Image 1: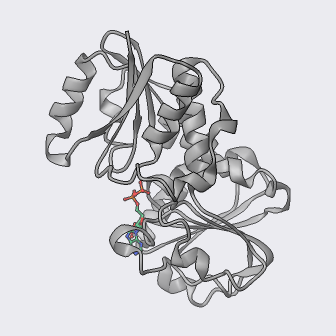
Image 2: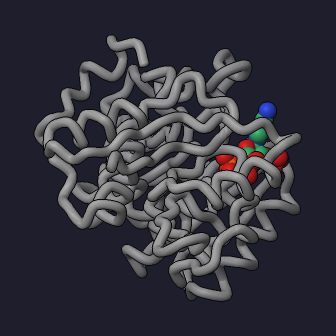
Image 3: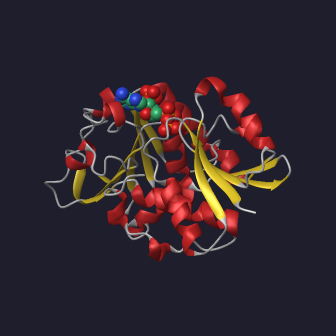
Length: 279
Ligand code: ATR
């Protein structure tokens, strides 16, 4: 029987996940299919309850449901519980879903080669994606000083409070306005907000050209468009710029292993194809 997998989110027009997983199922000759389950917020509870009773082996969960899905899970891996967000579900038995967070793994992958040089970090945003990024980073490296900047300072403070429960690092918070007078240079700056995609594609979350040094890494979690205005804004400098594609592939790889107990056949993905193909 064909195994079924899929992604739950809204909207799902431009997701690359079906391509990433179906390509691997085909390559490894696994009898499985990965589909989109676009669920509008108004029918979320009803649709999730229905999916739970169906014979579907696993899901990815994306925006805006990574937190909303938690009450529907029967078990959650400890780190995902701490972060309060799940992006992967595996059906362990009838009506029994276990939740995982593979974004934590995906986030850190493109930074591996630079981590030894990274000490001062600026995180832009304080939502679910920011929390996963902070957990991933602080779990990976102890000697990091973190600054969180967010439009709403209260949300940055809330994120700080949830982090100091688990980590001893120095964590500072600022509002976007306060950031205008900060004269600091960061080794790593990460945009975790959605400013730069969709309707916000003509905006940048924060001007950072005065906050970088010549070896800084600037990382935007957005992968579509391939190069946001934020990344473009530092393109005249010799700075390492990373978009969200490696994180997307990293989290998918880990989800794939959770579902199939097999390594993702990484060599099959041609990253140039992502921005050329229609999905
Ligand atoms: P996600 O789970 O993707 O992180 P989220 O939890 O809704 O989504 O968080 C969105 C983040 O983007 C927040 O930090 C939000 O700032 P606020 O806390 O002030 O809401 C930020 N954000 C969203 N739209 C923004 C905008 N137009 N300008 C600046 N920040 C924005």
